[in-house]
Length: 394
Image 1 (spheres, helix red, strand yellow):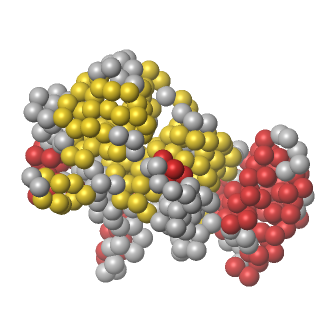
Image 2: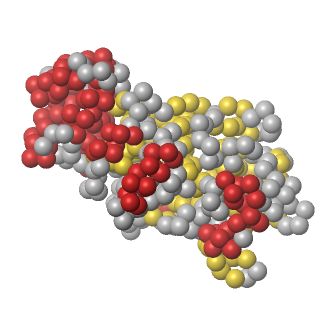
């Protein structure tokens, strides 16, 4: 068992209060803090200490993949830990984005490799499914609304430019996809006028207490941080959700999504593959986004369910083949499953102790541990809220 030293990221879209408050540091933080990573991703590997020597989890796994991950996991996932755990704390909306399937990523990387730049579009051959569990109210835009719902909202907004696009898309075989393509095809010289007309109309409709009013209010709020961005029009096509603490969102490949604000625990595949559709200063790869986006996929919003295999434990069902997520509440003593496979244990609140026949490891608030394939018969005791990431077969 290894105590992880998490990696803190300070992106401009982060929060000055959320992660610092969780960790008991003074607020506001000097810089906006966006993510706390717990894993072995090459862009932010956690530190560990073994036999008195400081190293990283990535280096430890690379030195002995089969011993750390188990032979089957090492073979299946290219000698890499297949999942990454985060605390996610957006203080402003993150870019609208979607992730490819593994097959889509490999296809484009082969094309780009033939041109001499295999990392031009995607940087690995993996899918990037994600799951977000709200630990404070969390606002998201996710999936694509049905065409009739978009048409209803467009009618209320009464913008000639938008109405024309909606009516033209309605005659196409796939109206949602056609409308997304039409909005993203708006010439850059027209983005500012389009966005400002849209935001003004959203402010007017936001006076309504219904779902469309709430969506328009959320778009107007996003516009404070992303003025004149074409992504504001893309948000019209997406479902607006507010996850309450304990709610989760499962985001497989092809789902359009943007995390707007809140605090959550996120688990995802160990991949960097992403294409964007707005709310960012980074490059928009519109052709690739339109190729991979699935207008019929809106992600699964739900609640944890009791785990029939473990006492005092809930599980979060997911479509992912890279991870499974569970949550333990104040365990008297719970056996951690997954002997012979890698796991991450994260104590969000409280104090717990991990015990094996050979050792013990204490975890306080916002601390995490890595369990390798060699760590057998691990139990957790204490009082707290604990998240457990395993392979999906465990």
